[in-house]
Image 1 (cartoon, rainbow, N blue to C red):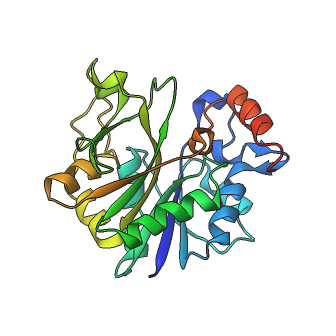
Image 2 (tube, one colour):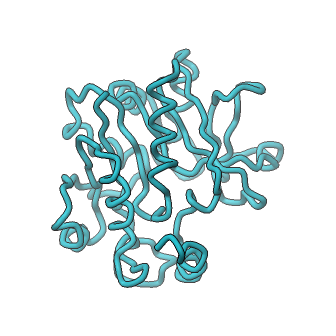
Length: 245
């Protein structure tokens, strides 16, 4: 089956305290987004689309030597809105589409392959990479359908009840969708949430309500799915993964 990837890389990353786009902050002198794209290249995606926004020309320059396409998100209005920017580029694409984050540079090819494989081999219409963590604060919580490996929804931290905040299984932001169902579901989400944004994660609830299963893949190493949000986090994560690098 054909597969495409959409890499979200439009944000500034204000907590990095720099005018440089977040995804261009270096790890061992190489922009973190290059690690993401190189990992995807190992898996031979038919198409890799990078969503750019803040100082996007710099991101394009950093990826000049990589076989990727670019689409613009001129106004940042959430992850769902960012993925919508790739709709025209994926029009008529018959296959599965991976959503990856440009600030999650340590996600391995093996983990991505597990996410793709389970979607292709199960009755699911999407798969989500989750992680079990000790401190789930600020992350979206995974709400399972009973004791199964299927999801009912993902609730963002700002929208979670006190009971939901006790859940320590979180969304890493990495998904794989049937391409057509992805964009059909995006057409049904809205901004009725604490951030007033279009959340990609709301597609899970749309799909559940429409009886289209979304399955879970739990990361063997939770650090793989962790995003880089500030300079100190970048330093710590680089140290953890220095042998791989």
